[in-house]
Each structure stands twice: as structure tokens, then as C-alpha cells.
Image 1 (cartoon, rainbow, N blue to C red):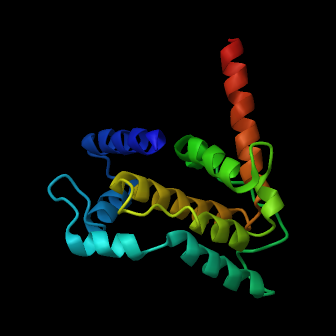
Image 2: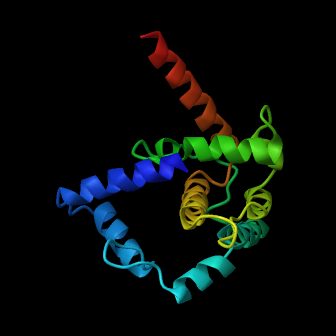
Image 3: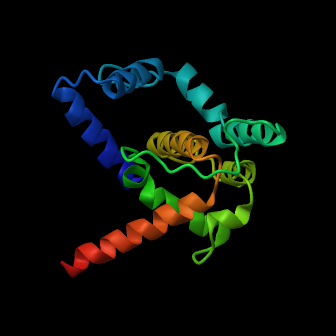
Length: 179
């Protein structure tokens, strides 16, 4: 959850510099559409919609449909490397570790789940409830799931890439400590 706060403030600082890139426009548009900006608090209708939504379950159904299509352009045998400008690992490293430990154990791997639809089905069991949790936890979970969907769509649905991202980040941190 700390990574969400860090990402939120980093995004806000970038926007404060009058960033006119497409990414900045999308951040602003998304915050307006979702009813979350500096001028308003989420209303009851938004909270009800957020409470009843399970984005991970929707993602599971989406990938199950893609996996059933033999000629899917998204789910392929070919591995596609994530773009160099992908910020997924920087934004969600802690989330990746947290849910990996919950889903497959500390020494487990995302690849052992088999398919993206299986991953999201299992993730749906950890969908935060607003009644017993914080709004920021629900928002962070949905951001993680949404970014995970994008990441898996970009690389052909290969779960082993999540394990590689974790391994590479650990190695990077280990090398940084040696400096």
C-alpha cells in the first residue's frame, strides 16, 4: 500500500509541472471519471460501485475468454518483452511480492498458477472489502489488478514474466547495496 501513496504523490508532482503528455492527460481524465480528485470526496454511489466491483474477477473472465480463442492476438506462445518505459515493477514490486506470498507461498512462482485467468481468479479472493478496510486499499488493489492486466496483455499472458520481474528487481537491489 505504501507503493500506491508513493506513486500517487509522484504522479501529482509530475502533473504540477504542467505535464501535457498523453500519460498525464490519462491520469487526470481517470481521476475525474473515477470521482477522485482534489476537489471532491467519493460519494455514496461511487463507494457502492467500488464496493460491489471485483476487478480481479472481471479480469479472470476476460482472460478466460481470450484463452479460449485459438487465434487470439493477445494470448500467444511468443513471449514479448515489456516496453522499456514500463513502470509496472517500480509501482507494484511490493504488491507482486505480497500477492505471490499469499497465492503460491514465499518460494512459489506465479508461473505455477498456469494461466492468467487462474491468477486473477485467485486474486479475486483478496479483493478488499470497504466495510472492513480502507478506501485506499481498495483503490490500490484495483490499480494493481488493472496494471497487471495491461502487463499480461503486453507480454502475451505469460506469468513467468512476473517471476522474472521480481528476480530482476531483487538482483538490482542487491547490486545497489554493493555500491
